[in-house]
Length: 365
Image (tube, rainbow, N blue to C red; front, top):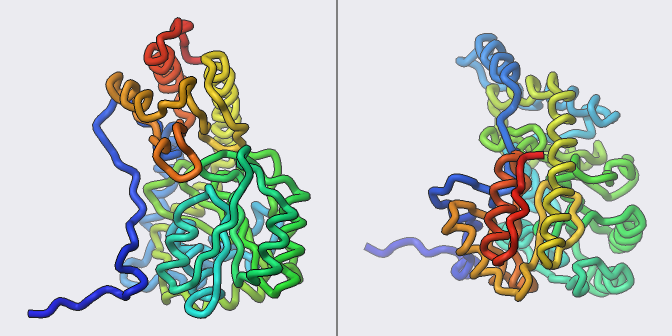
């Protein structure tokens, strides 16, 4: 029997993975430090009792889109929801990229942007960031003018660096994208932890969309719910492409329930930002190179630059962080998620021990 063969352009493609091992402190996947408030679970259970399980879900997710629009001061027609922000990104690229078109990313950045572009058949164009991981806007503008990509990605805060793009950078890139008839996608999966959002630049005449997720600040990674904010005309095009009834009734109910707990979410964000500062300060004390982060994680290079050895030393102490030391452009670097105060203290004590420095007797702040 002859097996069917994968498309030639996908034959060498590797999937996106985040290896998991059994540890006591898990700080490698940028999840929220704890679960949603207890009231959220009760609200979801109550909403579940109202679901007409024998009926298809609301195809337009009207209530959810209306609630999200209210959160951002927009209209429901300016919101698109899907199964996680990755499905949002996939729908964008199925609609505006694909064969014969190109997608531009600036590396290092979120690997799924290039991955999904390739899966949808688009040509991928890679722009480089500087040694400090900042974007050279002049070079970016020239690259966009020369390559004329259909879709350009910026991630703010950027993953894995944590750097927040400035408003002037976004405006400059947006202007260049508009000049070539393209679309700018600003991925704000970690946007609530940052000091500003590109959503402030949205209107129905600008080729800009902002993507968000419930996974981080709403502590709902297990639900896989994401959304997009953008021009109403663009949302109409996405609705034509996405599969019918793609967002199930349970997920819509959970998304609505979460919006009843905005105060809890904001308190969690404030706690993460405070803990992020503590981690950055201690890593700097230990002599690490640390990049400024507006996200719920910190990218750093341990003194000596042997990130792989430090990663193993942490693992030996049952602390798991993301080993990015072998990634292109991130030689020797590690990325740590901001966890609970207790988990963060455990990480800081462990890395001090690995580096042969006094632990500082870190305790939860």
